[in-house]
Length: 107
View (cartoon, rainbow, N blue to C red):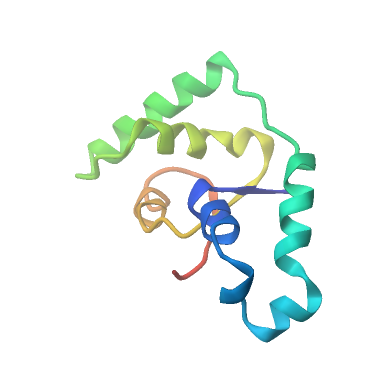
């Protein structure tokens, strides 16, 4: 399972059909994504995830990286055994100090 970060969703859903490349228009990827996004399962957040996020924040901070609180909570989603798909370069820095799997895509 893959956890899709907000910038990826935003990048996909803000695009107008006219901005899609011919392959995307031909396969109607954009419209398919729009219609299926409602069926994406949500991962529950537990109290332990907040504790883990604080530990991750401290681990990053002790290595000179100031992480955002929401980002650390996303990193804590590793208990669900998911990989994170993101365009946010901050997660590559976090990954050096906290255990989670990252799929980074270029902007």
